[in-house]
Picture 1: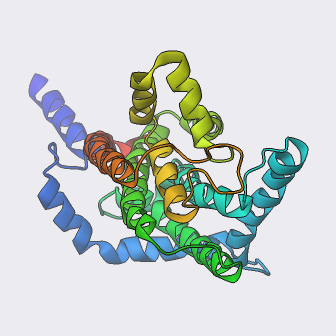
Picture 2: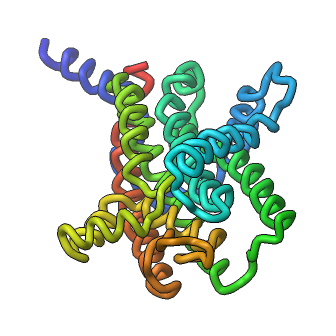
Length: 307
C-alpha cells in the first residue's frame, strides 16, 4: 500500500519543481538567448503599460529628474547654501544611475507576482521577468541621459576628456549590480510578500548613505578622519553604488575641486584609481550576480505553486 503513496509524492515533487535540479550557466544562457523574443516583448510591454493613456508619454521619464533637480537645488543650494558649482550637472550625473537602480529593483520585486498567469501557463526561463523590468528602466535611463548630455552641450559644460573613459566601466558596474539584486528581490517576493515593502525602506536609507545630493569628498574625509582609510574602502565594498555614482560623476561632472568651489566635491582619487575601483566593483557584482542567479533558479521551480 506504501508504493502508490510514494509514487504520488514523487509525482507531486516533479510537478512542483518545474525547473531542472541544477543550474548549468552556459546551457541556461543558451535558453535565455533562445527566448530573447519573450524578453523583448515583455520589455516593450512594460514600457507601454507605464505610459498607457498618458498625454506626455515617455516625456514623464524626463520630467522626473527635473523635479528632483528643482527640489534639491532649492534645498541644498538655496536653503542650506551648499555652494556646489554647476549643481544641475553634479546632481543629475549621480541621480540618473540611481534612478535606474532603484526603479529596476522596484519593478523587479513584483515582476514574477504581477505575471503570475504567465508563469503558470507558459514555459520559459523565469529570469526573463526581472530582466524585462531592468530593460524597461534602461529605456528611461537612456532618454534621461540624452537630455542631460544635450543640457551640458547647450550650457557648454566641458564634457570631453579622459574622464569619459570611466563612463563604460560605470555603466557596466551599474547594470550588473542592478541585475544581480533584481533577481534576488523578484524571487524572494514570491515567497515573502513583505519583501517589496522592506525594499522601499531599504532604498530610502540607501539613497542617503550614497553621496548623490551631497559631496562625496565630505563623506570620504569624515570616514577617513574618524576611522581611517580602511573604513572608507570597507564602505565602498559594502556599497558598490557609491563607486558607481562616483564613476558617473567623475565622467560627467569631472571636477574634484571646481575652480569656483570652496571645497572638494567628488571623491578625492585619481582617474586610474577610480577605474580600478570600478573594475573591482564589476568583479564583485559578477560574483553577486552568479550567486543571486543560483538563488533565483533554485526558488523558481516553486513559483507556480506559490503564486
